[in-house]
Length: 463
Image 1: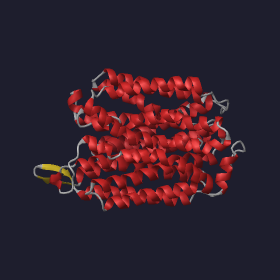
Image 2: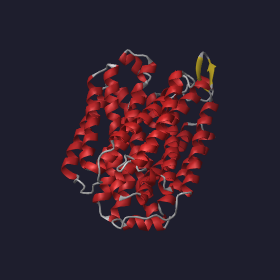
Image 3: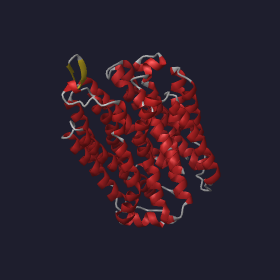
Image 4: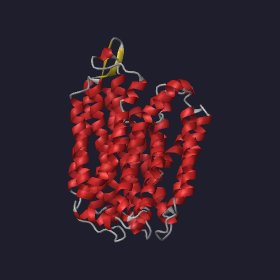
């Protein structure tokens, strides 16, 4: 049931992507303004994931989970009833905040399930971020082709209400709490840093990387970081325990998560656009929006099937081994994509291999985090790990957009990215996956694990 919540909020992240070419006409807005429907979701997701994770540790994970789901429902309602761009942006902001459902769900599973079920369950819950994103685009394309575009938001609203009812009926409230007061100044500092950084990264291509706005935001982000870190290290109850986050087991896992998030998102962004490129480019297939969305569907199916497999590998060999194999599989998928960009079936195979690696990686990440943090900080620590994936996706989006809009050629009066532009994206993403392998190998093989979860200790000894 918690997994269905995770899939739904992950679908929210990509559900408007197929609509972006049509939204300027539908909302009577400029294309640059419509892009805020993606940017605002990214920003609110990044800001609220660590904040709600910490709030869950302190005030109750089930309570905060319900607040996150209610935010998603409210956002869906706003998007369903209006075509006004300001209202849609507000709604998308509420939807983005709901990404915190995933780390909160992982923490609830750790607190409530018997030891033998913890690793398989958190593997499935963590992978919902990838599964939902993989299914979101093809589902949205089918709805947009056959129904009114508001329909997809009404569907998500109904599913959100069902999830809230199910949580109220099935999910117990955890008795585990962390002590102290909520770190308001720490929350404001982290929020300010994330807004400045991700806004600059997301809009830099449109504003210009050397524009005063972009440079100013990067400078502000760099200025906030040391002040925020200084305060957090001196706080009795910090929002983010930087001493714990600096442990190699946590640090290298989070850095690997950032690169894996980058490599995963490059696959989603490039595949749909590549197959839609016109045949006049010499490599494009001229596929429809529905076909381009369906190209990602096998990857989504692979993610569903491989999440339990990932848990079994982690139990037998340890999550560090699992993450290294998954990152290597993603790199292999991009190697395949370098030589198969002119054939639809081969494109689908390459994209599916990357998605398979993503599923295994996303399933292993929370197990590695939980090896290294106290049980009272599980939601906050997994929220930070989810945040790192989000930052990786934001950076990926900026780089992909920059490459595909600058490495272009004109054929038959149509300007489009060259094949080399797509190949460059694949090379960058493949290198990120390979670096993630190296970071994974730096994670210490042995970690202290709370006695409450001996199955994690067993997995840790085998890594």
